[in-house]
Length: 363
Length: 276
Image (cartoon, rainbow over all chains, first blue to last red; front, side):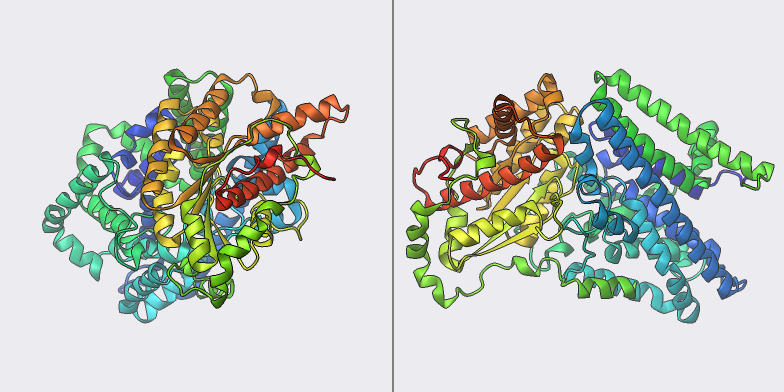
C-alpha cells in the first residue's frame, strides 16, 4: 500500500505540476503558479524536498541506517536518475526531430539547445552522457544527478561530524558566489543553468531542516516565531516580483555582486532567503488544505510519491505542450487542454507506478 | 562535490574573472586609434556565399561604448545572450561567434576580443531581460549580442509583451553604457506565411529602429540568399542553408561591429561587392 498523503509528498506534487506549467513558456496558466508572486520558484522547492527526503534514508542518531546501506541506496538513486535523464533527453530529441520533419520546419532542430545534437553529433553525444550538454528545460535532472552523486559523501560527513555538514555546504555555496565558481558546458560554450556548487546548499538545507534533531528541531520549536519573522519577507518578495523586480540594479550593488542580486543559476541569497521564508509561512497551511480539498491533496501527494516517473512524464509533456502551442491555433482553450491533459497524464503515470508496485510486477 | 569543484577549476574558471573592466591599458594603446583608422578602408569583401545584393541586412548603429573600450583598453568584452551559440560541424572550427572574434581581431590589429557565452536556448525575451541585467553586472561587457525573437515567436508570445520586454531591456542597456547588437529571427520557408512569426520579426525590426540599436537581419539575408541560389539553379540543401545562416550572420555581425567602430558612413557590409 502506498503511504498516506503527507505534507512532503503534497508539496512535491505541487512542485511537479508547477514545473510542468512553467516549462511551457507563454502558457496562460503560468501566471497562476507561485513564481508569479515569489522570487523563488518550484525548482527551489523540488531540490529542497529532495534534500528533505534524504534524511529518511540516512536515519536518525538513535536509529542510524547502516552506512553501506545509505551509500548504496543514494548511489543507486543517482544511477536511476541518470538513466531517467538519458531516456527523456533521447525522447525529447526524437520528438524535436520528428516534429521538424512533420512540420517541415528545421528550426525545431535548434530548439532548446538541440542544434548541437544534430549538427555536431559526435561531441554532443559525449556531452550528453557527461551531462555537460543539457537541453533547455531538461536541466533540473542533471543537477539532481550531481547532487545525488555527492549525497553519499554528504551522508558520510553527516554521520562522522554532523555539525560540519551545513557550514561546509554554506562555505562552498559562498565560494561559488564570491569567486564565482560554476560548471562549464561542452561542446556548446556556456555553463550549467543550475549551478550544482550553489544549489547543493538548498539540498543540504532540506536535509538538515527535515529532521527532528539539530537545527531542524530548533526550527520546529520556534516555528511560530519564525513564521512571523518570515511573513514580511514573503510580502516584500511578492511586491518585488509584482513590481517587476526593478528595485535592485545589479550594476549598482557592491562586489561580490552575486551576494546581492537575484540569479537563478547561482541560487543567490535573495532567492534562498525568500524561499526559506516562504517555506516557513506555507508550512502552516497543509493541514487546512488537507481538510478542505482532500481529493486534490490525495492526487498531488500521489504525484509526489512517484516524483521521478512523474517528473520524466512532465518534462516530455511540457515539450509536447510547447510544440502543440506552436503548431495549433493558440488560445486559452488550448492552454486549458494542455494543463488538464498534462496533469491527468502525470496522474496516470503515478497511478500506474503504484499499481505496478501493488501488483508486484517484476518488470 | 570535490570532483565537480576540481573539474571547474581545471576548466579554467572562475567564470567571470575575464570580464574585468578597468585594467590598465597596454603600452601599445597609444597607437590604437591610428591603427584602427588605417584599417578602415580595408575591410575584406563579403564572402561570395553571403552576398545579398541590395538587400538591407544590417541596421547600422554607432557603438560608442565598444569604441571607448577599444581606445582605452584595446580590448572589448562581448556578452552573447539569447539562444545558445551553435557549434559548427567542423569540430576544429570553433563556434560561429569565433568568426566574429577572428574577424575583429584581424581587422583591428592588437585588439583583443573576448566573447562570454551566456546563451540559454529557448529563452524568451522577458526572461532574458532579468538575466541580461545580472550578466551585465557580472561580466561588464562593452557589447551585448542578443539572438532574440525566435523563441518568442515559437512560443506564440503576444507581440505587445515581446515589444515591451525587448524595449525595456534595450533601454536599460543603453542607460548602462552597453552597446547592443540584435540578431534577428531565422528564415525558414515554412514560416514565411506564419503570421505570428512574421509579426515578431517586424516587431523586432521596429523596436531596433526606434531605439537606434544595431540589428542583423538574419531572416532577410537568408531569404535573399535562398532566392538567389534558386534563381541560379542551385538551391542549397537545408543543412547547408542552416550553416550558411549562421556563418553569414556572424560575418554580417562582425562587419557591422567593425563599421560601428569606424563610426563613419562606409558602404553597408552586405552591399559591398566581392572581388572574388
